[in-house]
Each structure stands twice: as C-alpha cells, then as structure tokens.
Amino acid sequence: MSVILEIEHTTLYRYRKPVSFGEHRMMFLPRTSHDIRVLTCTLDVSPDAEIRWVHDVFSNSVTHVRIPGQATELKFVARVTVEHLGVRNLELPLAASAEVFPFEYGVSERYDLRNFVEPCYPDPGGHLRLWADQFLTRGQHRKTRELLIDIATGIREQFSYTSRYVEGTQSPLQTLELKSGTCRDYALFMMEVVRRLGFAARFVSGYLYDPALDGGTDVMIGSGATHAWLQIYLPGAGWLPFDPTNSLFGGDNLIRVAYVRDPAQASPLTGSYTGHDGDFMGMEVDVKVRKLAVLPTDLQTRA
Image (cartoon, rainbow, N blue to C red; front, side, top):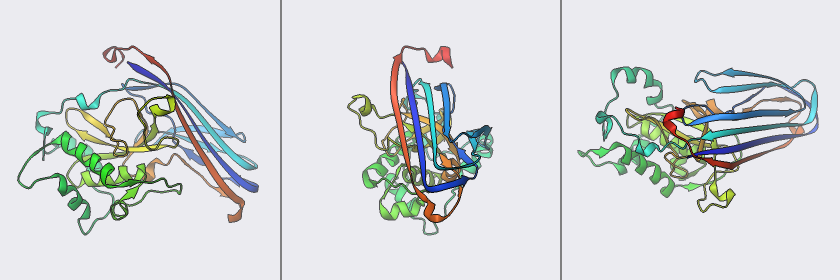
C-alpha cells in the first residue's frame, strides 16, 4: 500500500513597524526516492518575493527567498503532496558481515562514510560512550539492529520529551545532563552516541504524520512542527531511519526533507531583517500533515 500525504507548513513573522528583510533560506521539499515521491509543491510568500532553488552539498533542495521592500508581516506557506510507499526497514536484510556488533565497514564504505562516523561534538570525559555501555556486555557480541533499537528505546524511556521554541539544538552532553530534550536533541544525542560505537550516522529533518490527527489510535510526539530523527548506515540495508522520540524505524510516518552531518545544516527556515530589536513581535509556526488516500501499489514496479 502507498499513502498520499498532504503537508502544509506555515511560518509567520510579525513586526511593530515596517522592516526590510535579508535573504531567507528554506528547507521544506521532501527528498524523492524509491519510497517517497513528490506529487505537488507550492510556496506562497507574502509580501511578494523572488524565489530560486539550489542543491546544497548533501543534494538537499534549498529555497532562497529575496523579499524586496518593507512590511510588518512576513508569511511563508509551503504546501506539498507526497506519495509514501512505507518501506519496512526492519525487514531489510543486513550484509552477513554487519549482522553482529562490532563490525567494520568495507574499505570503500569507510572512505565515503568517514565524515558521518567522526563525532561532531567533544566529550572529553567519555560520558556518551559510558551511557552506551549499558546496552553492551564486555566480551559479548550483540545483533546490530537489536542494539540500535535498544539505544533508541533507551532514550525514549530514560529521557523526558520537552517542547522548546528557541532556535538551535542542545549539545549531546546537555541532553544527557538534563535527561530531557526535543526531537532534534534526541536525534543529535543518539547520532553522537552511535558514532562513538563506530556507526555512520546523519541527522534528518522533515515532517511527522500523526495518525491521531485523522482519528487513529497511535499518537506521535512532535507533530505540529518540523520533526527530526537520524539515519544509520548498515551494510546491505543502507541508510535506515531511527526516531528515538517515537520509536519509529520505518513505515510511512516519517517524511524526510534533508539529511546532513550536523543539525545546524538543516534549519527549516533562516533569515534576517533590518530594524531595531524591539521591532520583532514574534513568530508562529504551524505544520499540518494529513492522509488523503491509501492506494494499492507494487514497490518493485515503482522503484
């Protein structure tokens, strides 16, 4: 079965008096692949703006918006319809060499993955590795996929989810100390933990479909805003999603927009204005993801 999902992402900035704007940078277009394809896409900006599209260093679609003139409000409304084939990543077989942890990537893989294996955040005391040790037994091997699922589940069970509307992501050590964080904090924390175990991992920003919004019984944490999780590269299965916020490991709830080495490279919307500090009155963000239809399909004929 494939699922047709509609995404509406609205961001509104308000100012006390007319201000002028610097160029804004947006990341909202889902990445098309064998499991997700974009059917329609529109972007409305008020006041009128000049729009251009580029690919960043990771081949993510990035929208640059130039707003001439001045205004007291700046509004972005992105609407996207996607078809999600809901690949069941837990069923994808791993290469025999990677079924049991620890394992080593092949020579060619290590060369291409090295920037995703190297940690981005310092941990001189080794606290992240010490936290991971609770899932390992010295001298014993573990099934690779089970280990990673246990780590994701451990984050959800041991930490408290919290909403935070300020820009940025906590460092992994902050998240460990506070035992709480947002989806972005959880994703970064797990990413840095598994990198210290030798896994290649990348940060993913995108959208989350919550079946509860359409009357379903499953309730997802983090809907109503952009969402974040991570992907881990496992030989044989490739880049697999792990969402420690909701214990999701595939399916059709996650709609990826961008994957990057570090969260700072995947901000959904950034920009500037020219005016006084007191001119800014605040911002509102609203993300709606709805299921429009469920269609029978054959993944092999669509890949």
